[in-house]
Amino acid sequence: MITNAQRINNAIDQWLSTIIDELMPDTSLRYRAKRGISKIIHDKLNIEMIVPFLEDEDGNLDIDNLSTELMEMLATLPPQNMSIGPVEVEFSGKDVRISWPKNIITTMLMGEIGSVRLNAEDISELVKLIKQQ
Image (cartoon, rainbow, N blue to C red; front, side, top):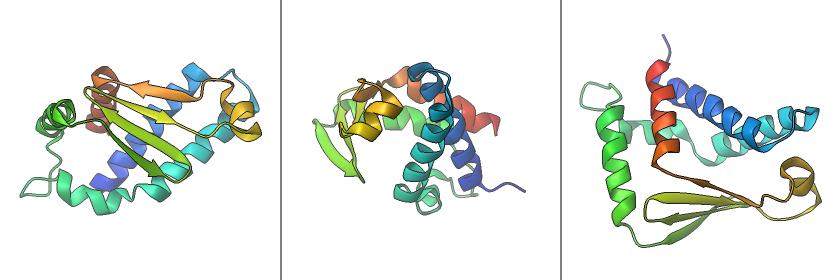
């Protein structure tokens, strides 16, 4: 049986894959970027430690209510920044901006993009993927 942490990790990987497919040309670097970004996220965000906060009393993911509450909470937070390894994350209102340092590696992998902005629609897509797991 698949655990809730595995469900979330699988959904995150699918979600990231879709985003990277939209941002990068179809080269072997795209595959490497997917692996590298996935590794950074899974190493820095220990999903197994977060899952108990996401489960209800019976150990089930209450993802619909949780996503609604999360989006409402993000909307009320003042702008905040945090670092996850070399990546900067900025929460501001109803979106999240993820920026990475500009250097030769990131430029080769991601071009001149420099950052990605995620909104409620993107979060809804992640929730949908988690529910499909």
